[in-house]
Length: 129
Length: 134
Image: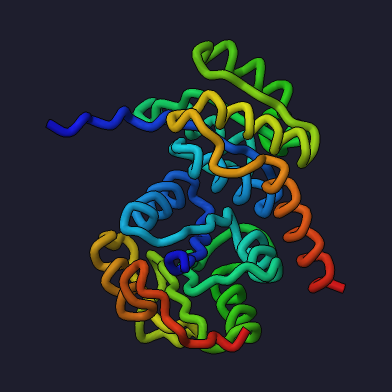
């Protein structure tokens, strides 16, 4: 069985690439989306996604919070990490975890491992999809 | 002494449809390339102007949106980065075929699987998304 699949949703091209590349180096499978609408299209395609990492502010009709809400409605147990430079942890949001920008890849990797395990240790939990 | 592996060659896959882009990029990663995914011509320009990325080739949808259309983008790349090969593809099948050719020239010199199966996979994903939206 392959490694867990992470959906990275980020509209800044270089940030998206560096984040996805780092997670692939760690050993996860990564799908990239350039905005919330693309992220939702991937969710609707039926591909198995184990965790979502999304920016909050993105162009288009679906921002990071709306994408989180839609993901929770499709698969309530699937974890979502939201990343933002201007959202405070104390603010109410539907995500499982919040990561303030700028963050280190080590901090993000630790959070991911806590939520879905290290790569190649695919959780048998059903995300409710 | 262990032989040092060569640096992977770098490609950009540019397509506004995320399902097509993801699948082509994943196929080319399996062929041994380092792949950047771009949703618009603006993102292609950013990737190329970030010289440290060392892009070797661009596989782009002929209907790529953005600051330049795909044909203008090909001219822009030829003028600014003449060493970067540009391949434009008009549909899923031709994009998968072009990815197969890139794979043949790629770092691993072998295809991990048939490009036709990539095209079939993309079509299945697109159909599944359409069904979900109905």
